[in-house]
Image 1 (cartoon, helix red, strand yellow):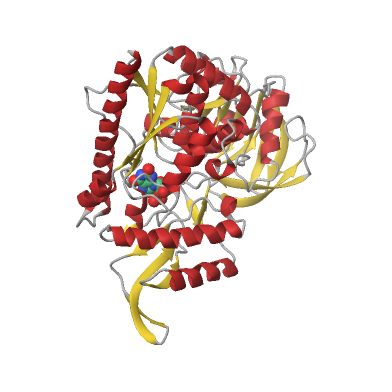
Image 2: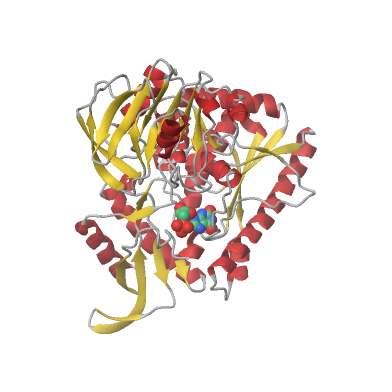
Length: 517
Ligand code: XMP
C-alpha cells in the first residue's frame, strides 16, 4: 500500500492512479490525517501531492517532520516537494516568480530517481515558490529555469521529490520517475493486477454473503455490469439483477443488456418495462433538476416494487432472505464523498439510494477501491465483451436530460435515431476509444429555417457534443475529423424527420458541463 497524502490539489487522484498503473496499490488520505493515522495503515511508501498554496501562505497545510524520519519512504511532488525541503532544513524562497505549464528540466545528476532518463525533460510545472537549497546530504538531480533545485533525493533515507508533476501526461517520462521512486527507492513490489483483484473480491464476497440472496440494480453502464459480473462469479445464481427501462435509454440498450450481459454471465435478469409510468410523470416538465428528481423517484419506486417481488419469491422458493444489494460505487465517489471540501453541487446525480426503511439491505460494493480504467480491465478479466466494457458513460436520467425542453415519446424517438447514427459513424471511423463520451442533444424548443427538397423546412437542431476527458471532472471538445462530422450531419438531416440542422459544441468543461442539462 502506498498512501497519497492529498494537499488539496486536483492531482491526488491522478497520482494514485499512476501508482496503480505501476502495479502498486494506493489510497488517498487527506493532509489533515496525523502521522500516526497514516503509519497505522503500514504504508510501504508515502507520496505528498501538489497543492494550491504557497508554503508561506497563512494557514498553509503543514508537514510533520516525523513523517520524514520514521523510516517510511517519502516522495514529494510540487507542494509536497517544497514542504519536504522546508521540513528537512532546506531553503524555499518566496520569489514571486512563477513557472506554469510546459517547462524544460535539465538533469544534473541522475542518481537513482532519474536513472536512465534523457538529460532534458519536458515537464509540467505549476509553482510560485522555489527550492533554492536542498536539505543537507541530499543530491540535487535536476534544475529548471526558475527552480535551482527541481529534484532531489537521499536514497539511504529513502526520501526524494520533484518540483514538477510527473503524474500528468504532459510530463515526459513521468511514469518512469514515479516507478524509480516506488521500486528502486521504496522497494515496492508490483503485485496489483486485475487478476488478483478478481480473485480477492470473489473470495471476499463469498465469505460475506454465505448462502444469502443478493440483488443488483443494473443501469446498463459499465460499473453496474462489472460489479454484477463480479458478484455472479462469486455466488452464481444467488444473484438476481433488476433492470428498469424508463424509456430514456438509447437504441438497442435493453436488448444488449438482455442478450449480451445474460449470455456472458448467466445472471438471472428481471427487466421492468416502466416507459409509460416515466413518460407520464415527465409530461410538461422542462426544468433539468425537476426531471432528475422525478426520474430518481420513479426509478426507486420501480426498483422497490421489483425488489419486493424478488424478496417474496426467494423466501417462498428456498426460504432464503435477500439481504444484500450490489452497488457499482467507484473509488473517486468514495474519495469525493469523504474528502468533502465543499465541492459545489453542480448537478444532483442520482444513484440507487434512499430505499425505504422496511427494505433494508447491506451493501456490497466490489468496485469501491477501483478507478474507472481499472473497472474496465476487471470487466475484460471477467470475459465481458469489449462493446460492454468500453461503453461510454451514460447519465442515469438518460436521454431525458439530452432533450432541452419537454420529454415526449416522439422526441425521444427522434433523439434515439440521431444518437444511433452518430454512434454508427464514430464506431465505423474507429473513434470510440478516443472519445470519452458523445452526448447528442435535441433542442426541442428551438426551430430554425432550412431548405429541404424543394421547400422550406422549419425544424429542430441537433447538437453534437463529443468530449475527451479522463474523469469527467474536466473535459475538452474532441477534434473529430471533418469527414466524420460531415457524414453524421448528412445522415441525421436526411434520415431524421424534423431535424434540419446539426451543430457542433466546441466548449470545454469548465465552463460548459458535458451534458446540456
Ligand atoms: P456534467 O454534465 O456535469 O457531467 O459535466 C459529468 C458526468 O456525469 C454524467 N451526468 C450524470 N450521471 N446522473 C448521472 O448518473 C446525472 O444526473 C448526471 N448528470 C451528468 C455525465 O454524463 C458525465 O459523464
